[in-house]
Length: 79
Image (cartoon, rainbow, N blue to C red; front, side):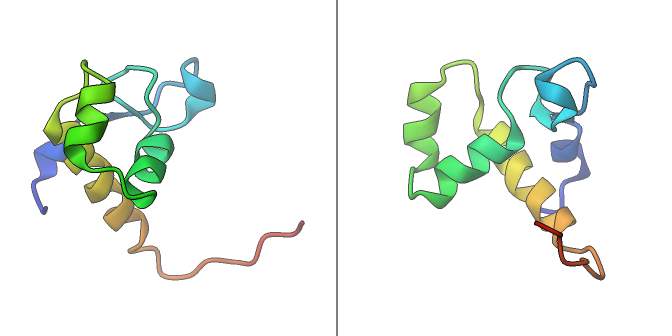
C-alpha cells in the first residue's frame, strides 16, 4: 500500500465536489468510497455499482486515509 503512484489518483479540484478529494477528477469523493468500504461493501461490489472506477482507485482511497492517519495531533472540533 506504499505505492506513491496510487496517491496520484486522488485529485483536489476546488470547483469539483466543493474541493473535497476525489478520484481522478470524477465526482466520487474519497470520503464516500471509504464510507462504502467501512459499511462492509467489498471492492467487487463497489466496482460493480460504479463501472468507471478501478480497483486501484479504491486502493488509493485506503492509501490516502492511511496518510491522513499519520497526522501527529488533532484538536477537538467545536460543535
